[in-house]
Amino acid sequence: MIAFLGLAILHFVGSSIRMALTRCGWRAAITSPSSAWFAIAIGYACSLGVAGIGILIGLAFVVSQSAPHPDPLPPVGGRGRLSFFVLIALVLARPLVPTQWDEFVWLGKARFESLGFGAGVIAALDPAQHVIPAGYPPLWPAAVGWISLGHDALSTHVLAASLLVLLCAATALEIFAPEKPRLLALAVLASTPLVWVHLRSTYVDLPVGLLGLAVLGLLMRSPERPPLLASLLALVLAGFKDEGLAQVLAATGAALLVHRHWRLALPALVALAAAATWRGLIASHGVPLFDHALGVPQWGWVPRFLQLFALHATDLFSWGVFWAVVLAVLLMPARDSAARASRAMLLLLFVFTAAALLSGPERVRVFAENGTLLNRLLLQLWPCAALVVWRTLSVRTG
Image (tube, rainbow, N blue to C red; front, side):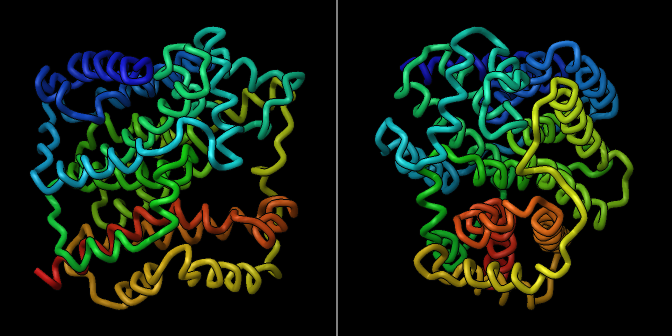
């Protein structure tokens, strides 16, 4: 029950902040699942100490450029609520212990928050602590610790992380609530085994993809004055994982291809500032950066990358026929701006993924050849690819 109480407190605090900053009204704020991100994003900036002041100043500028009286996100309809109730049952029907090896890493770091607010950041910036992976953004385990209210218990942390996964899914569902997929589209999306597995884990790959998709939806809803929530989600993405920055940049680039308004770049600027702040902190504290350091692209590895990418994407036991359907859908004409934007974002995500692997250290390419890395990167692309399929098949079968 502690984790449920912690999420409720975060949601209440976030709703209060949202109402004060956007003047959206108390009812709109408290009934929106995405309100919790207001507390999590601002909490992350505060946990960085003095370095976070610059991020808060940037957010203050974003507030001045956001719509003064934004329309609240539309309420989720009956079909969306039913889908989310099924999702809740699926995600929470799991053992309250780690079941996959990386869960031990993420949940282990959540224990730091039991020592006090921001203890996870302090530990991550201390080379003597040997926090692994070294130099990784600290927000996901910190948020798990906040939802756990500092209670140092494994079952509490597993439940808190599962609730965080649900919050990411609820945010994406809320933003795309007006969409009504037909049965064929739902069947294609439901037939991806690896996605169902990761919904019941506390890995960060699927949540990052879901929030990246949410950023795209917010930018497309209000291109002239994007809502403050888009920038806060961009900050959260940069704090969750380095790949979160790629999600924000891809969403921004896709939105700019359709709507050429300079304010669309604000979330990307916030994410870049957050990522630069964290990289500056780990450099100034002497924390080594191994896995996500970038160098000269190894162009000779391109054929191997394409071979591995195709091998993983066509594995029926992991993905079913999902990526084959995506390829077929991409060959169909896009009928509206949202469809074009989602396709552009998916292409940009693929390019960023390839660039990161080609420019990363050799040990990462070896891991891609011998491990599960590419499937996890495909999970980050899945929400955007799902939207491409969703919109195209819903229109054509409607």
